Length: 258
Picture: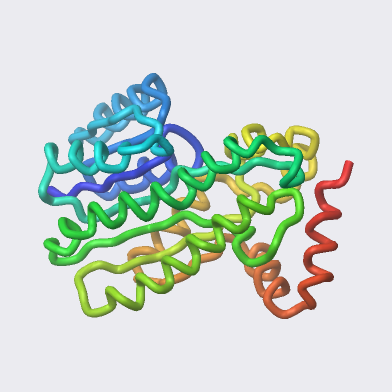
C-alpha cells in the first residue's frame, strides 16, 4: 500500500495513538505538531517497527499561514494522501472574562480556523483518491454549553456541526467525513487547560488514548459521520441533548467547582 495519512497534533495523546494505529495498518505518515523532538522520536519508532515512510513537520498551526505551509509540505511528499486527521487543539479553563483574550482567540484559531483551512486546502487531493477519509476530533463538550470551558466547548460544537455538514456535502464524492467526540482521555489536555486541580476526578473516567484512537479509526473506516467513544460518554451526550439545558449547564459547572 502506498497511501499516506496526515495527522495534526501527532506528537502525543490521541494524535500519537492514531499515528501508531494507522502505521500498523500500513499507511505512510505525515506527522504535524509543535514539538520537533517528540515528532522525531515517534517517526523513528514507526520507521523501525513498520518500515514505512514517515515525515514530520514541527509547526504551530495557530499561526497565520501555517495551514498553507502544511498543505504545501504535504504536496511535496505525496500525491497519494488518503486520510486527513484534524486532531490538534486545546482548551482553557476559567470564566470568560478572567482568561486573557489573546489566549482564547489563539484557541479558536487552532481549534477552528486551522481545521477549516487545512481541510479546504487538502480536499482537492483527497478527492483525487479512489477512497479517502477526513477524521475531525471534537469532544463530548460539543454537546452542551460548559461554564468554565465556554470557548473550548463552543469550538468543538462548531467542529461537530461542520463535520456533519461536510459529510453530507461530500456524500457523492470519494471523501468520507467523520467526527469523533472523546470524553476524558489520559492525555496532556487537562494540564494545558489549567485543570490540574481536577486530575483525580478526571482519572476516574479517563479512557486510554489507544482505545479512543481505535474506536475513532474504526468509525472512520465505516464512514460514520459521528463517533462518541465509550458507553458513559454516549449516555452523557444523549442526556445533554434531552435534559433541560439549564440543568445540564448547572451540572457541568458543578463538576469543576473546587
